[in-house]
Amino acid sequence: MLTGLFSRLTSTNGLQVLISVLALAVGHACSATELKLSYKVEVPKEYRKAHIDPPPNSYSEVARYKESHEAFWWNCVMVKAQNLQAGCPFVCSGTPAATAGCTDGALNAECQIERLLKRYPATMVQDYLRSFASDPHAIKLFSEGRFKGKPIADIE
Image (tube, rainbow, N blue to C red; front, side, top):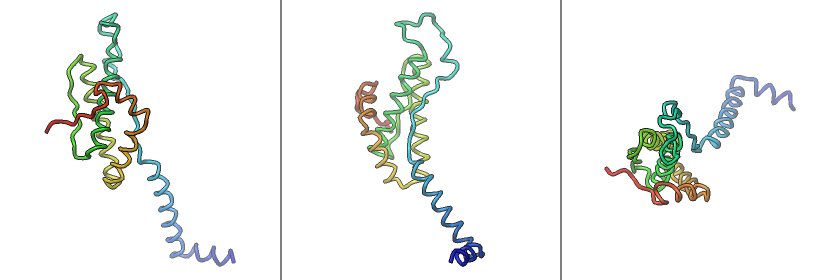
């Protein structure tokens, strides 16, 4: 019995079927784990150096960059969870590190979301964003940040 199955699988048609089944299985396994966003901040080298020692109010450029990056990243996720066509603001005022953090954070989130939209249906991505944005940890982070829990879309 196994010999017959093996001979059918090693035939040209059987091998093609086996390869197709394996490709589908691997593709499904990969796609099931790829629908995700990840927040990661890496402060650029120019802001890791202390320009003023000590910084005013003990608030370093690194801290300013990180805070702005996180706030604008989460704002973009929240905005896109409500409306995938909405733009994410990426400009703010502040020190050079803070303004760079705003831009980098918003653009990072927007790029990740765009990558998801190229691979998955928009409804699936938006459902995922809504789920991601409704996580208690995400809500806490966003409500304590610059936007005070209210997503702000870019004005067009």
